[in-house]
Length: 292
Image (tube, rainbow, N blue to C red):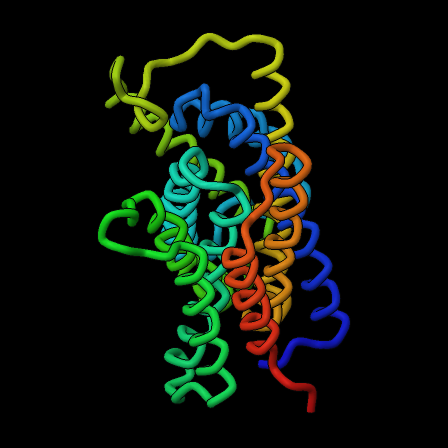
């Protein structure tokens, strides 16, 4: 089904606003040094976002999704996706983690071809190959330097691609607010589950509950607003526009992450890493369907 022009434009604007917010949130999380365990951050952030989502969703219509299984599966994929990405942030520069993560649109390209039962075009193969080479230039894997953490953004990319294709294929009729509500409930459920497993030496994933000061409370409040914008915007974008087209504009996260990395952390990727980021960005543009 072809999206109407106005729907496509709205989807593009929504995904750019969404990734702007989410990239800023990821920079905030990296900036705090993950002084809170992830499970505590999941619970507090979504607990602040839920009341506003609840009010907005109730005004729009029924709160119960039309396809609860697919909505729950989508939420689970995104919860694990963010968990994988957040675990990578303390261990690598934001811009490089973002570039590895943004192989996601290339996964979407491959999944879209599989869903259509059509072999990828030469143009699509060129995009996938270019993106893969870009990842190799960024991560530069070898037997000594390759760490499991460097693969976490790639895992996140695959999970994100599956979630967004599921959004387009099975959750198109759902309200974006209901999808965002379900996602944040998923964050709280996952946070409580990890919290039950918490221990004194659990690190950033399963550490004990940490006391909050004014700075952390302000950060959590900002993250709640950001996840509200990001989760609603991404759901709306992938419902309203063709997944491959939306995925290409999803790449604006790379530009924002370079900006935040430079402004907040003084990160300056080297020439090889910049070449890899450029290859991934170009691969995304190549994946954009040609106008008829």
